[in-house]
Length: 202
Image 1 (cartoon, rainbow, N blue to C red):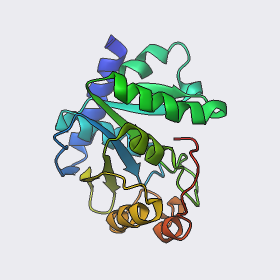
Image 2: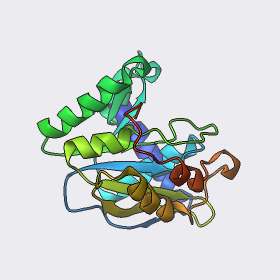
Image 3: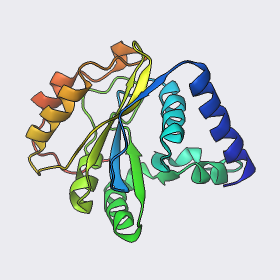
Image 4: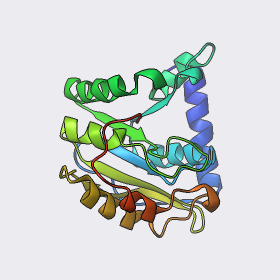
């Protein structure tokens, strides 16, 4: 990890502690899983989630826009665990992440299914197809600004029944308050539209 990545990670962890957030949950015993990072409505989500991951001793990877991986910040982003996403090749990314799980002994992939800080009516389904294809659990990561808590919920192995699995996932997030509630996906919309979708961008 280069010096800039170390400084950034230290600063994010320090800010997390100073703001008085508390951590809930424990990481799973397996070292391979997909983390759902939700609800995602603000850049502050990244700050607090990195702080929590550092406190839990998790070496996370995350998928980010390719535009973020340009000099002079490309090395820093990769050292922080970043993986650039080319939106035009999103289906290839699902396949690539499945292969990455097979290649690595440890891979903790964090994905924000809303895909944007703006209003999203539906979650992107790449996280689900990656977990199914790789045979790894989906760990529910949460941010709750009202109670100032961040952490990990249960680890769920996808059954292949997308609708049923999404109902379980939506139920977990019902009590989590995002930074900007008006921008959050309504979880009843997730379950209403859950109908075995094809893979799309993570």
